[in-house]
Amino acid sequence: MRTWICPGSFDPVTSGHLDIIKRAAGMCDKLIVAVGVNYKKKPFFSAEERKSMLEKATEDISNLEIVIFSGLLIDYAREKHAVAIVKGLRAVSDFEYELQMALLNKRLDESIETIFLMTNINYSFLSSRAVRELAANSGSIEGLVPDEVLEDIKRKFGKGGK
Ligand code: ADP
Image 1: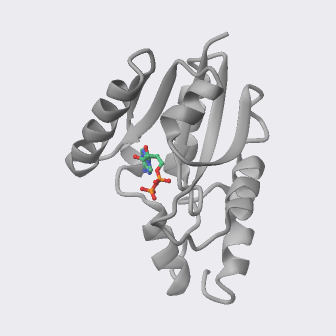
Image 2 (image 1 turned 90 degrees about the vertical axis):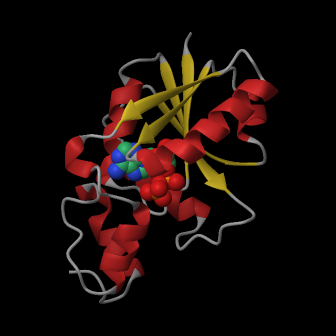
């Protein structure tokens, strides 16, 4: 069974994330979506909230497992017998960081590949941060996040989102 792992903060999940998740799930037997708990980042949504929103947004994808993980991604990937880490690439700015991570992970475990999927052009501008900024300032986030989580995000921002 070919297992891939798709890590991220998903703070919150966006339509760009969902696009990458759907495409990746179509290319492997099992996709583990790993919600990272990063000691350096203070997320807006708790890990449980981020996981729960991902679950709501991906109910129709059968070969998914959504997990919360902390520590080194490569260790977690190995523990889960994943053969690849899959990531989305938006712009050259993503590439520099992602190349560094991919090479580092390759050094830590040569058997695990990093696979990049190019962003869907419709979402190339989209990030969780942009969604948070919009929602916090009464901007519309419709279409930018999966419909299933729209209300959860608005609720979290109080009367912020439209
Ligand atoms: P963000 O940068 O939005 O905070 P994450 O850290 O949660 O996202 O990213 C998880 C993965 O999803 C990363 O590989 C990131 O490059 C990718 N990703 C995020 N947004 C998009 C998008 N709009 N299109 C393609 N890939 C994306």
